[in-house]
Image (tube, rainbow, N blue to C red; front, side, top):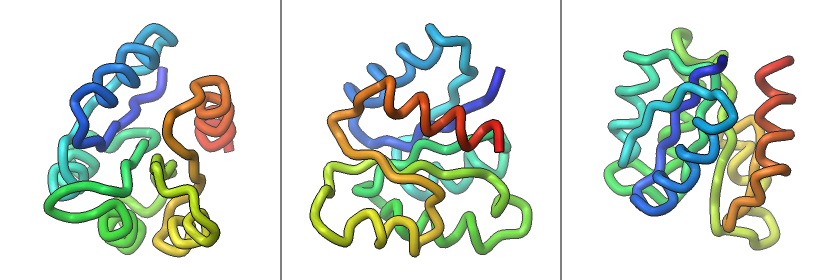
Amino acid sequence: MAKILIVEDNPKNRDMLSRRLIKRGYEIVMAEDGQEGIDMTKSEMPDLILLDMSLPVIDGWGVAKHLKGDDATKHIPIIALTAHAMAGDREKTLEAGCDEYDTKPIRLPQLLEKMEKLLNS
């Protein structure tokens, strides 16, 4: 099954999402801030990244730009997870290099559909 990197600074969100994805058979690795997300991507080479945009150290936009600018990691799909749901926020995440966008609170069926689409493309 696919390896998913969850980059999320909120422990409750990280725990809830990881448990729900593990139940569905995904292998989960986690990072708590943007720099750790970059480091974990390079060491774990996940199949997909779920990236919170409001992170300490390096925000999600910076993480996405860094990973998409690196030949070793640019192929890994990134789904932005954010409470930012204002006009233009989706476009901002896509411009940073994210492949997809989903708002919090997470609606798991919708997120799983986006994940499967990216993992199977």
